[in-house]
Image (cartoon, rainbow, N blue to C red; front, side):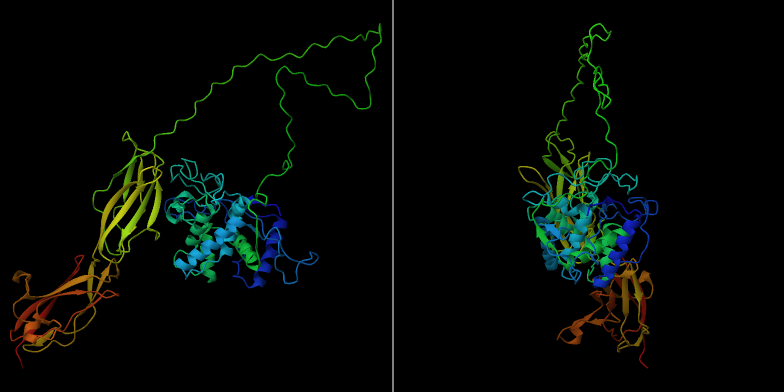
Length: 574
């Protein structure tokens, strides 16, 4: 079946019939069901990626894809009765290296993310519609395409409008982005999700092992379980937001689950290759100036011989005139390659710090410079996180590679602080140099904080001298309206009901007892340090009183500045 390379467009009657029959076969197979028959969104109906207020672009930037469907089974086709693809059929063949990459990606994700359960057949289905399995397996020995597989320029004309994000490093375009590689990642998505699938220390979207693992990682995002139909559909639509794309991928997924076999790399024709003239009349070859055009000879009428004296004497034909030589156009000297980067400069202000589980205000940034200290464009800088804090880059990765732009600046994605306070290091490594150039950027995850305390108990804070208050004070700490777990808090008993009485712990009145085997007299304290639990709750120990009567204050303050002051009253014994 000839591959059709197209967008989500309205199909003709024949394609509609094929799609409808494919849907029937898919439903009968027991595979995850396709979505309802909704019309595919037109370019005018879809939001322009990158536009203000719109969602981030899909993996491919909603680039074109191959719309051909797997062959259908039916009467008169001599198909097997179980309606499975015939063993050895051309459509079920997958190039050996490509198939190996899909299967290795499945195995790697099964170990690193067992909940996701991504099947290699799903990667094969996406690889089929995105690039025809890397143009039929045209790869070198490392699994890399000899030349980049590029989608159209995403300039908003018929497709998404995505301005350049990689300085042309991946797609060769410094004005707009283009989808790149066998799995068609746009550069900005590759920066977040690119993976090293073949262990060569590089993340190359043109390498089928790297691209297949990156695609699987993206499909598994948001804690998805791809055996759940809703998660499966959301994952595919995140790749290309088109209902027709979803249906096409599901058809191939179902087809490959019924059977697929390995074929040699490059043994299949590259999809989308033009055949014939496409119904257009070939244009005649151009005629050089001064060259006479041959006169057409009428068929069936040979030239009459000349007779002497009949006025038909033949005159010698003048030789064709040769046009004067033209001056060749001036040769444009080849562009000079700028000197490579040799050093990195830290652009941070030393404030690489954030409380646990919060976003860092500053992004790690460096400038790549040449030996003459001028900015180096299109240099590759790898940022790697080290430390035990659990901090990651936005998207969950701990290693990302960024390409510098004209100003030589490489800025890492935003950092998300882990839950464990402590020091961390962001290593910036300049790639492509003979000698390693690495810069260590120091950072810190500080204690989690809260901005509000709310009392959740109804205990009356009045007690007779020499007794114990009934109940215990219970509070909840929050940060931006969400529970704040692991936040340190200090509870202090203060003298007097007026803040003018001071903020130091009282030396008499209500008190807490610290744990221990010592006598109670030795365990009295009027200042405690506590930590909120996993739900942000804080339950204070029991409060006891000595023989001092009067009004006191209980002040509770958290890291982050949340404060609550409660009044304690101690009365004479009855």
